[in-house]
Length: 107
Image (cartoon, rainbow, N blue to C red; front, side):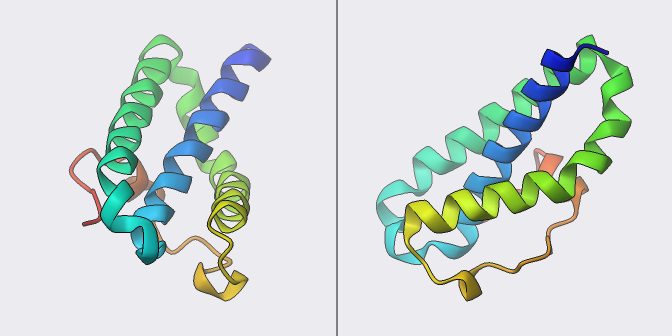
């Protein structure tokens, strides 16, 4: 599998997780930004699904990518939100299945 495909998949996974974390933990901005964050979640899931349809062999790599993608998304979200590190769990509490599940969308 091409390095660029893996890189794109991980990049989209990071953005997806980051926006899920914003919906879950960034309460002060949620009222004004939740709609855009939800749109980003929906679009990133769609793009991940398309990547996996084109390259099904990448699907097992999602499990391997998840931990580091979560750490990067957490770091990005905390920097952007300027929230204390204790706001967001250090280890992913969202299972990968929920992250990718189009039926799961935090309110």
